[in-house]
Image (cartoon, rainbow, N blue to C red; front, side, top):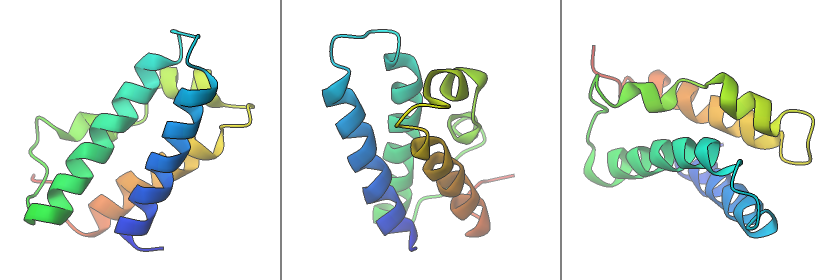
Length: 96
């Protein structure tokens, strides 16, 4: 799957999760983290802009994301998020 296709699929799943859980505020923090990573990815694709060292932490999965999504119908979002971070690293879009 291309980085663009992966980004679109992850964004679609996050949007579906937001819609289905719009009354639950506890799920928002992990989704915001993922959405920031998606935004940085889309900016990197559109502008051929590397991710700065200060922005890299948005691509490191946190326990909060796993805790909120693991063993739910949304746990594929975790795998998509991991794949996104892997593909960004694979393209050397993280500045060292």
